[in-house]
Every structure is written in C-alpha cells, then in structure tokens.
Image (cartoon, rainbow, N blue to C red; front, side):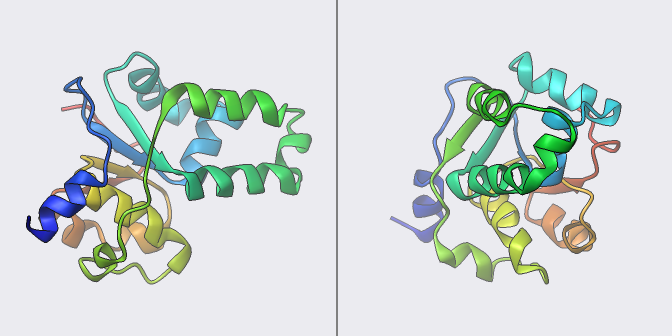
Length: 156
C-alpha cells in the first residue's frame, strides 16, 4: 500500500459521483447563519446533492465555538438549528494524517485543516475568502484543488 492509498482510505468515499467541496468556517457561516446571497449557488448545489460538502469534527467544533462566542445570539439564531443544518448537509470525514501538511503548508495554522482535508480527500474546491488560503491557489491547483471565493465557485 502506498502513502497515497493511505490518504484515500482515510476519506469516506461517496457512492454518488458528486464532486467534493471543503468550506472554511466563514463560508459555512455565510451560508447557514448570514444567508449571504453570494453563497446561494453553492448552497443550492450542496442541498440538491450536486455537490458533496466534507468537513472534519474539528471543523464542526470550530463552527460551534464561533457561534457560542455570541455570533448566533447577535443574529437571533438557534445554535441547535444551525448544528442540525450542518449534520444534514455535511459528510464528516476523519482527520487526515499529518503527512498531508508536508504537501502544501498554509501560513495560518488555523486554516491548515481545510487545506489538508481538501488535498487528502481529493476535493475539487476549497471555498474561502481567507487570504492565507487564497495565496496558495496556484500551488493547490497543481495538486488538483481549486481554492476559490464563493463568488468564483462555478460547477464544472
């Protein structure tokens, strides 16, 4: 078994041919909390099953932590409803092995988990507005991962 086989086996494979996307925390907030119109095409693709959104438990915990810091309350949103939406639409994956970090390194350690998951699971897109991730666009694209803003995301 090669290291690449190990990476692929750490990701849940879908029986459907829907392409895979990783959303950073702010993209998820834009979609589920703020109902940002710029996320509408992508959100529609996820909810319709044309796109498969993947994340890890750590990403889910970060989302919950941000909501618990008062963000949900300022929007008068119920964190339980947002957590249920996460569970309904997200396909949680195991955390990729540390070897992924050596493939492409993000200067913001908090964003590394999104990059690692996208690379390990062969995601087609990583959706983010984060400058540290967007800075890696060209290098990530060479490895098959397109890092795009919500406005730039287009189904292929």
